[in-house]
Length: 453
Image (cartoon, rainbow, N blue to C red; front, side, top):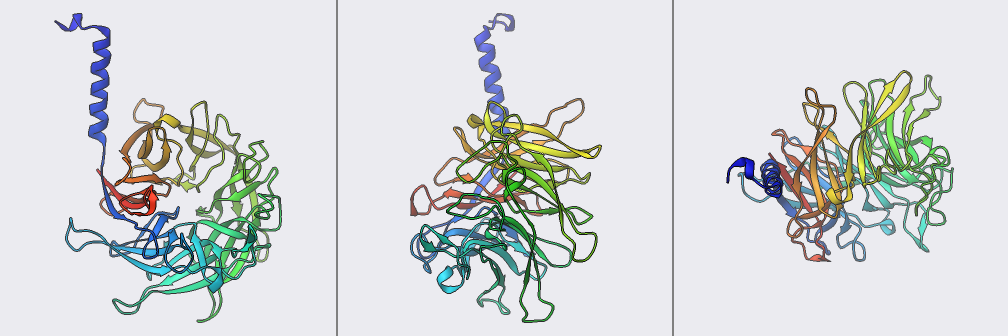
């Protein structure tokens, strides 16, 4: 049979086969570096912030469950994964701290990842615990903390935890979530999803609609860190339930997203509204107020809704982020916000479908040539790691490439944390389920993974 006689269905089959070969050849290689075991001896369900590197190439993160200091399923741990001395050998996990909850004035249930300073100190938040009087379902849970983990002075020693601030659940915030951000002076910035004294978000379980806060280090050794609320969200036409993972521009303005608010009628279990993207400008004089501007209010339809992660900036000052819903596919979107003539314009760069791995659930990252990378939490085809490439030549559209599909146990399931590059261009992060751990039932306890070209 010559080419002209090839039936139409055979042509389609051939094209499909070639497409599948092309996709398969584009797949990056994935390796599970560590599977959490859960129970009283190890962590389980890695927190949403993923992992960070130190100068030696070791990884650090936190899990929201696990450890023996609290009743099952535990209050969570902070961990180190040490890079092997010889390539191909296993990474080694060390539990740095086991959180013991509000009964001991400690944090419980880390809700974000870790940030690291130049001295190797680690900083993070827990959603519960601390000395605050927050009550959930009749039990005192605490309102969350900001903590620091200080490395030992000698090799093999213990890490030291310091509680930098315990939220009290009133105007100062409740349930910190997302990663912390440093400014150049060493101050920490973050968000709480509740508290702040304004709005009605998820009452009676939680009160008010969240804050953006600043923590300033002590002036003298041994002093206390000082918290200042920069902005309290009010819901309604304002945002509600900020996500953390804040980003600064060159002029010191802060950008972020709120999961709810905006008064677009997207009522869910937690609050009202489809969410917003916002900017906070610093005061023009000492003692002045930070000024909020809503850059975009999501409508839950053609432009998505309820963003669950922070924003990132490119060199031109444009912002990039993720949101759920969007279009008829409902699998979530990747969006860009660009300042145009005094207004901010949203452009949807990619729509995910629920049958194609969506929705995205964590912050994006750039590589050195402007490609975006992220993860999806899993539709009917499972969760994945993806690359979004900007238009090339005459192209107008961004193009998506799926780098790895998670296959389930013993592989990870449900990546819900940002990725991070190492110096070789390999990607690292966590999944909340999957792996070979047996202490969390049939779904696994989560993994730390690497994906390389």
